[in-house]
Length: 251
Image (cartoon, rainbow, N blue to C red; front, side, top):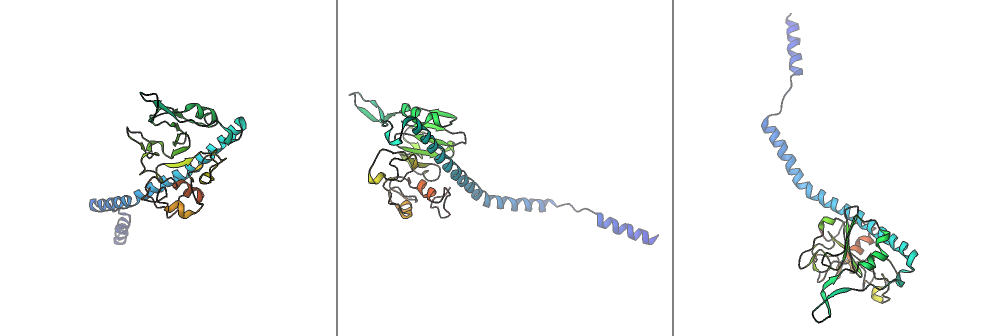
């Protein structure tokens, strides 16, 4: 009888469950919170990079496929109509270059029939055609330069500038927006990477070296520039549409 009672006590001890104390739970939650706070910015930045890489490559491929289809209808790209920059007239009947009018006819002829877009805005006050794509990206199209936003929500217009666009605020260029150039008819040395071609990352006046893409003081892909970071798109393309590990800008 005594042995049975001893065995029963041992069984109860082995099957007894221990609960966490409140202090242990709070300490564990605190550790999880600290780890999350340390890792979340990196995870978010890496996600933005992946989205940018994927959508940049897709935009480049999609737009140049569209140009090839348009060439089948209208001939070689360097024979297309000249894009005319349209402006409102001032009181003297002269062009007011501060008040641009979107040249929607050109876009509708050579681009619109060959791309799939969720929405197109033809008058946002910038003189550009704003195109919202199905993957959540956005393109600003004008006579030559094209500003591409991997995330359309990063695009905004204020009274004085385009956020991240080609004039005004350049702080987002190379991270939230990227520059392409469509200049197929300019047969000059400075334009050799764009002449008789489709839409390419901005390479105007480029000498062909990675060093210039990174370090040009005017439009290089670095923190401090005098104009914009227009060469960032070409730097990413050079790396197979992957953002280099030593990319100089933070996402």
